[in-house]
Structures are given as C-alpha cells and as structure tokens.
Length: 119
Image 1 (cartoon, rainbow, N blue to C red):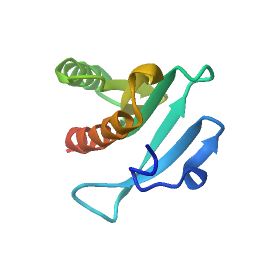
Image 2: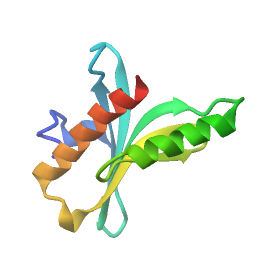
Image 3: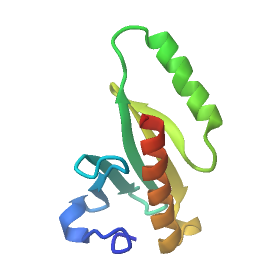
C-alpha cells in the first residue's frame, strides 16, 4: 500500500504498526497534511485519520451539530471522529477484508474527502 502511495515504509514509520504520511493538498501543493495510519495490536484493523479542524472554543454546540450532519451525509467507511480538540475524517476497516490495492484506494479517498470537508 505504501509503495502505491509513493511512500517508503521506513521513512513514515512511527511505531511497529503505525506511521505518518505527509500528503499534499489538492488545491495548494505546498501545504502538507499529516495523515496517520495504524494497524491494531492483533493485526485485525487498519485505521487512518485525516485532521480536519480544531474544535472552536465558542459555539461548540452548533459546531458539533454540523459535524453530526457531515457524519450522517458521509458514505462508505469514512466517518468524523474527535480526539482532544481536533475533528478528524477517519476510516477503520478489518485487514481481512482490505487488500493492499483497496487500502491504498481507501487512503486516497480519505485524502480527497478530507480536502472537500476542509473547504
């Protein structure tokens, strides 16, 4: 999967089963976004997260409603998730169901959708 994305495993690895890829934006090629990849300890689930936006300090209720609306409108395996004060677009798929080519396609879909959601 990493080779198809143009990444070398040793250069993106952050742990035994995790990594971070810097991907260019579709609109501004100079802007890079850090996308995290991980496989769970049992090797059963592959996850990827694309940071969208920081949670605002004010008007949080309206913002959370907006995120729920986005989540309801999303299709396939992509979902909005929140960790700390950042909203992410993410996917989590069983590794048994995802072939290498499909994982790369899922990752590319995540990046494209993340750019759309950001705008």
